[in-house]
Image 1 (cartoon, rainbow, N blue to C red):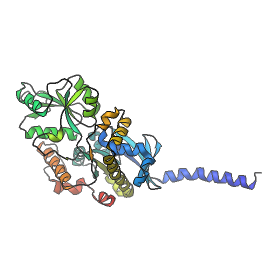
Image 2: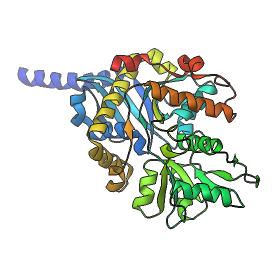
Image 3: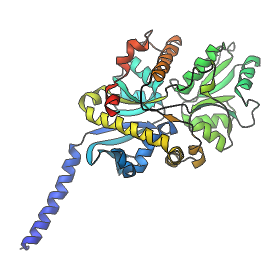
Image 4: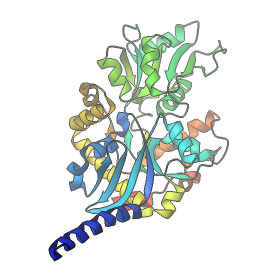
Length: 366
């Protein structure tokens, strides 16, 4: 028979071993999506630094690196986040529609398109602005925006410009700006009367391949692809999309946002609230540590560190008036393009703001 002290130790070990799984099982598990882009840098930094960002109050504790994390509120575990990598904002919206995501990050335009189709989800916080570019192949005579506009005016055939997703912010901003500039834009390859042919390259990973193969005269895409094109010698930055005409209209435009399903908001508001606080505080950290954050994101994404450090992203912590005006302009542009057929068709931002947004958690986070 074991001595009393040994029996106590064995009992304690058994209790510890059985208690931990029960505690883990009690935590809600939320599928959380993101895209391999520096636009989602704050989330990548939070995953990578883990306890190194414990000072923020809300942080991520690795369970399986790059796959699963415990969302921590101080010393308290709040939820298990199972990560899901999406190829684009459109795919993210589709995953929400299929109930394969509970929370995530994606472009605001993709989420608008999803809500228009009836997907029950809401934008809960902004993420960033800027970080979108028009890139031409290395050695192209198109070096500036004026060069590009001249090419469009003088060409006898449509100028082909690639994009990665029909509802991506770069595609929407570029198409809207070109239409406002008076150019005829099409997605129909048979329309030879158009001046610009937009080519759907399906994934961000295809942007540089199409550029290098000169399948297109230019591409529009989010960071880090403009930076990668430059650092790898595959392309040259023609302009930041913020500088497209009309002057000033595209400055500080919304891009990516934090999103939660209606079910997650209803069943786990405290988890979504902690997620919002994590994003808000990681945003602030990334703005204050720009080069380190860029290097961390580059390492996560397998990019040259220089490409990460070159980022010009600005991370946001409020639905400011200018940000909301930009969101309203996106809505108007997409309606003029006939992109909406359902909930958002021919409606203003004021009319659909409660449908698109849950602003309460961000107010609480601040």
